[in-house]
Image (tube, rainbow, N blue to C red; front, side, top):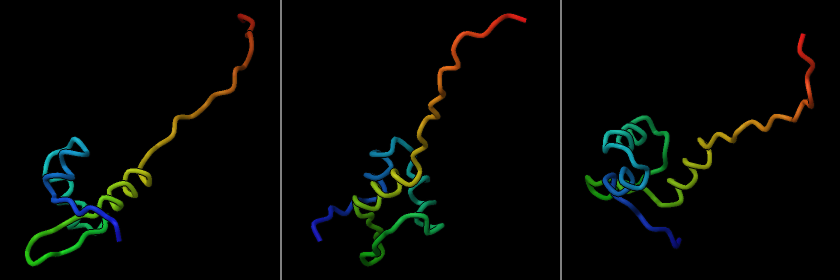
Length: 70
């Protein structure tokens, strides 16, 4: 258990979003979090998992060669 726990503010800064975005992720249970009293802490690994799960890879198109004009 060598994970760093981040506040909602820290997660928002890391993701480059407003504070509302990680709060919504927590409210909708779309990211793992820990309640410490009334505080919410998000494990750094949960942020990495969220980013990995929502990363869209580009489509690699095969070269089609030369096309003739119609």
